[in-house]
Length: 169
View (cartoon, rainbow, N blue to C red):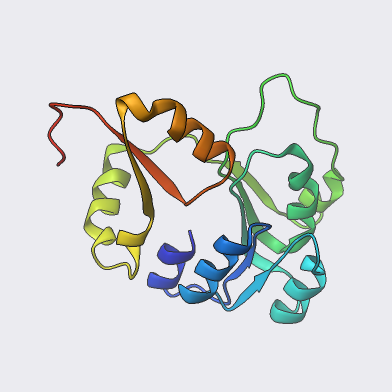
């Protein structure tokens, strides 16, 4: 999201990330403000940087408790996108519906993409600085358990499990 937003001219781009290595990448990749949500006042920083809230807030991890604060970070008529999958059967997410109603906030989700969106992504990806750094881990099928453990440990960004005989296009 950071790389594509930067490539498309969005800003200021504010990243809230609890993992230090990912915060360092966000700073290197051009985030205007990088915050540790466990130590920093995220809402205060967003309001200081934007005046009235972010145009868009993307929740990219499936933690139900992040939805209410996301709604408080967006400006009136802004968008909150739930990009992550959330646990089935998880606790309901309580939030103040007045934030959506009176703020005319758009609350939406992203689950998949259309063929045209994939086509546009392929066209854009080569123009996005650092895109080649997103894939940080490669595994063979036999290394599946290691790949799983790596993911649980939040090691790296994106991982690829390579299947023998499958052409990489």
